[in-house]
Length: 352
Image (cartoon, rainbow, N blue to C red; front, side, top):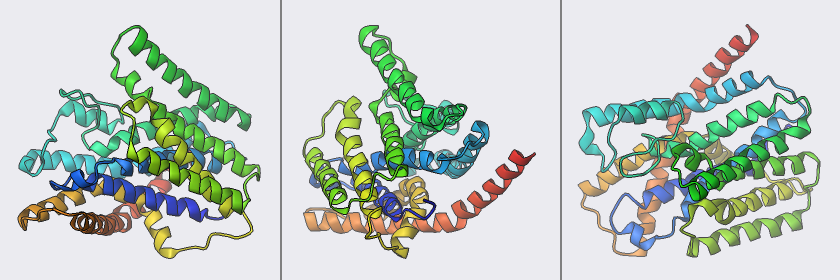
């Protein structure tokens, strides 16, 4: 099935918007008090399930070279992230007062550029550009998935990746809980959130075998996933190790339901607007922290105070619209041309 899967495009757009709203709550006093649930962070989990699906889908029936495949994925993700990470470092050097809490660290910058977790003095584990923590997981998944391509049998890819990630989670629990040894790397990569990639891979196998296609069942699965998201948002467990259960499973249901519906006789129609938002979702994700900084500065400049739900909603929508515009501009002027150049360069390197 080579046609565009529109439902996943739309889900990418929605997931990115959720993350923006989640971070927009932090920009002005009063908004977070009205929107206490970090429900918007679930956009990350939707992205991870989609990522696992796409990696299996694009390699289905093919035998790509592991190193070439990884280089292509690195060229797709890294350049834009590196640009914004370096831009943040420069701002921290020349305009540190613009930031509330972020500070510059050479170690943090280097770890960020190499997609490695970095622990700050306050115990937080995140890159210099905070949203990059998800890209650390993405890149780690790409490494494991690329290794799975060494096996000639396509059927081994899912079991291999699942076994590696489950083993890592178990090892992390043994080291931290039984041996009482602190390891930043094991604690970070041993989170159950990495199982969301496996869920996406499994969904891809179901999809490729033609088991989707029931509109009624898909609707039930989709509604169940949405319902679980709302139920979890009312009381999110404090134990982040259980994230796969309270955000990952609903995200997997959401993706499965959409694919079940789109695979039925009633096709999901193309929306140019939503497709465009889906295309620019990565640019939005990487750039929105900068755009929200502008929103925060503008709010402080005019002395904005949020005292009601209506005011908070208007503020969040204004932030989302501004971030979407910035994300689209970044996509058209930076990401898209850079992606084309990266593809051309990596193709030439692979050919040589």
